[in-house]
Image (tube, rainbow, N blue to C red; front, side, top):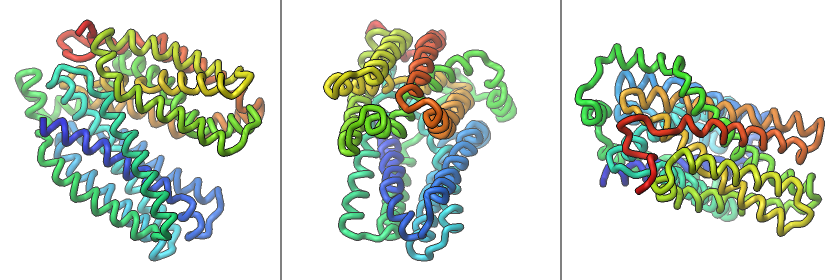
Length: 398
């Protein structure tokens, strides 16, 4: 029970910390006196660091275990966030901010993989689908972090003070939570009866890229990562430029999408336990595809709102269930989750600029048809998420 609560806490804090930084981007731009391109470089430094962290996480877990790995990366997130905050406000140094964000991204990416590995282990231990609920806690954290950021900006609190306090709170709470995370070796030993030697674990960390199931699960995650990421980055623009509405209306659409996604993540576990992981993914990919088509073709706002709600609900479980499927085998969970997360991060990083370039050529609503095709690909690949023999999670009929 304490283990599960600790992982829920880490997901919540990850969402809160990420949104706390993102909510202060306008202040970051103003304090550093930088333009949009330089803001893009800041975000790229964090994104590139995250991708490196995701790709290296499986090696970290194979060599030292998730608990020891987290003890380093959680500290790295706090240091990176604080250094970035100092660079923005107290020092007014753009290079310091870049270095801080790169460190934060590196640590955050590795942490993301390791807490997903732990979440999958919790699922197997409890014999229930919990991954969507873990990701719902991340979403709740982003809402809380964004809300706190708005309040801090309204009250004129400096970026260094705001993010410095967030880094301190992160350090204290994650330090306490980590005490209740068992060593990875104990988890594997319970699951398979013995702990593989470190050399074998390192070999498994690299061998996973030769497994066709890795790429099939990656296709599920890729399609749904594009479905989620395109909404986060382009939905408001599609409402304004594509449907001719105001910016305020665009913000309402994004809120509807986010609420729909969070709600379905919160209630998705029992649905998966009832009908199974594969059928859930197939049904939701259909819902996401239909919702996006409705939004693209909608003749009026009420219908467009229905489409966005379906789009958000349908895209809600692809990423968490893909992670859950990747971690079915506890002996190579870290390697598989790292590989799956790498594919997802590539979609999140590369998707927005690619879609932006295409939309410049053919318009934003026409560009969204590409997302419809990727959602269809995700649905067709859903069979790869079938639980492996011996897995206690995602089989359905409970």
